[in-house]
Length: 434
Ligand code: KE4
Image (cartoon, rainbow, N blue to C red; front, side, top):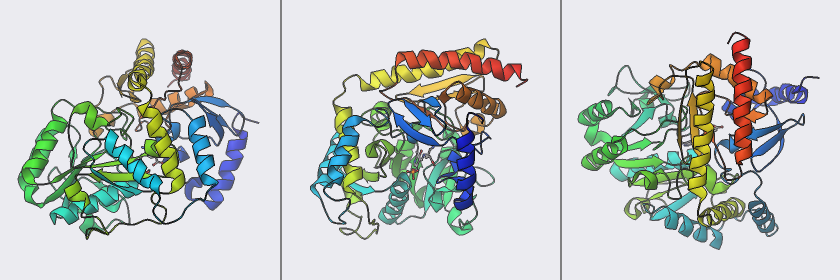
């Protein structure tokens, strides 16, 4: 049987009962081809699949595993709180303590609402911005992903400063038309949008470091100008820190880059692997949220004791590790620049980007600054490299348009192993004509 025989059999069964055999599209390997790997267990920086193969993991459940899989203190805290009841649908002191901790760590956040996913967080933040300003339009950036909320599943119109069009069937053209899209890092396009629609813009939502088109850093001045344009037009600036929150700095990208948004969305790390999201920001805006304000938003399992306990344990651990972000910065630099240098050494066009615990390697000579540039990369070669790395025991994100994630559990020995694997993998790819 092949090294993934059991995964292959399980995928066939899964595809009978779930669309694409998965609970979320990117897991289906449609971007990289082949059969997705079914996981059996994980610990620290490693995962094991159902065929018994082990991998050094750079996905970490798409971001939550900042301290490594199955962190013993997180697992024990969840086990203990679960024994006292799984959910009450009523206030608990845990939520208050958790929100106080988020407010302590993210200074721009004065008040928080807990939800159950990053999508719920961004969906709610946009509704709140529209309710607070009374304005219809939102601004986003091509290649940035903020969850599957209708207003955000929108493609750019025919040109910049034109009305959006649905990015997927099911999104109403009339709603899509209220979303304006600019290329990431493109200040001229942004200025054109604000010049034309300024007074109609409720909010601008941005990934302060883009992690859904590879890893793309904000160019100097980009976030600063975004802040000043929103301030000048009365639009709400939303930093979507679902991925960057607690990953690039304890206070998120906003702390790292010194920009104060009006609202922040969070997820992933703050749940430690359990379902959670949050949105928060200026008290004046947050007090428009029901039941104290008129903007409705609700959730049966919001503030769930298990998710909150996992998240609170994560944040307390993060707060207690003085070298966490220097270590994460060093790991992501070693992995991304090491992999880039291996590829370049083999004569392959490659570039890299990293910040905090996230990184990207692009099969493109220059590091992309936008989605339009990211799409110029040699994706077919990345896909062959991805599978060659799997055979070497390294699990990269199964798409050229995702970021990679390191954890405090990754070791220097594992990094050295990954760079050896990269050498072998790119040799295999080139030897087979790719
Ligand atoms: P969720 O609804 O998946 O919890 O969060 C949506 C979301 C919001 N904002 C940002 C910046 C995000 O990256 C995400 C979700 N990220 C993807 C990975 N690129 C989740 C993986 C998936 O869709 O399965």
